[in-house]
Amino acid sequence: MAEKFSTSWSDIRSYTDWVMIIVTLVLFCFGLAAIYSASASFAKGDASVSGFVIRQLVWGAMSAVVYLAVLKADYRNFLKYAGPLFVCIVIIFVALLVVGHTAKGSQRWFNFGFFRFQPSELGKVIFALVLARICSALPPNNSRGIGAAVLVAGAAIVPIMLQPDLGSSLVYAVMLIAVFIAAGTPVKILTSMAGVGVAMLPLGWMILKPYQRMRLLVFLDPTIDPQGSGYNVIQSRIAVGSGGLYGKGFMHGTQGKLHFLPEPHTDFIFSVFSEEFGFIGCAVVLLFFAVLLWRILNVSQYTKDLQAKLMCAAIAAWLWFQIMESVAMSMGLAPVTGLPLPLFSYGGSSLLVISLGLALVQSANIVARKDRF
Image (tube, rainbow, N blue to C red):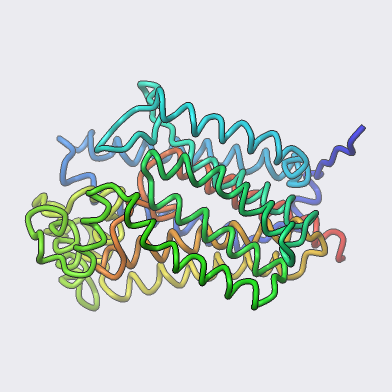
C-alpha cells in the first residue's frame, strides 16, 4: 500500500511561510478594491457594486478552506495521484468541446447556472503536478524524458487551443519550459527546442482564429482597427497613462466609469487600478507580486524533494506569466489574451485554483523546513 502523508497543525503553525501568506492577503485586498471600483461602471446601485465584492469574498473564504485542507493533506498525496488526475482533466477538456458553454466565440466553460467553471484553470495545477512526476522520474536530458513531457503537454494544450484559448495554452507551454530548466535540461537541448518552436510559428499562425490573428496585429498597431479589436488596447493605454504618478484617486477613474474600458473587473482590472492609484500604486503591487514569486522560488531552491522543486518551478512560471501578460497587456506591450491577473481579477475559478497552487507550495515549504530544522 502506498504511503499516506499528513501534516500536523503544530507543524503548519511552526513552519508556515507567513511572508507568503501576508503578501497573498495584501494582493487579494488590493484586488477587492479594484473590483469594487471597476464594477461601479456597469453595476446598478450600491447593492450591485458591493455584490461583486461580496461574491469575491465568498470565493476568498472558500479558497481559504481549500488552502488549509491542502496544507493538512500534504502536497505529496496530490503528487501520488497526478497521473489519474491528469487523465481526468484531459477528458474534461475534450468533453468541454462538445457540451461546454460558448461565450464570445470560445467554448471554455461549464455553465452551472449559479457559476461558471473553467477547467483550464484547474488544469494548470494538475499540469504542474504531472510535470513534476514525469520529469523527476524521466529527467528531460534525453529524447525519452523530453518526449514524455512534450507528449503530456500536447495532450493538454491541443484541446485548449481548440476551445480556443491561446492565453492558457501559452501558460502551459511556459510551465513546461520552466520545468525543463529547473530539471537541468542542457542548454543545447533547450536551444534546439527553441529553434523548433520558432520554425513552427507559421503553422501556429495558420491555426489561429481570425479574431486571434487580429489581436496580434493590433498589438503591433492598434490604429489598424481603432473601433474594433484595437479599441480595448487604446482605451487601456489611456487609462494607464492618465493615472500619472499618484493616480486620480480611489473611485475617481474615468475610463472605466464612463464605459470606455471593456471588461474592467476581469481582463483590464490592472488598467483600472493604474488609473486610480498611478505609477506608485502599481509599483507597490508589482513589488508584492515579486515578493510572492521570490518566496515560491525560494521553496523550489531549498527543498530536497525533486518533485517539489519542479512543482514549485511550474507554479512560479504559471503565476509569473499571467502577471506579466496581464500587466503588459494593459499597457499595450502584449497581445490581449484574457488571462486573469492572479488574486486581482474577479472570478471564483481562478481564485480557487491559484489558492490551491499556493497551498501546494506552502505545503512543500512546511515539509522542507521541518526536515531541515
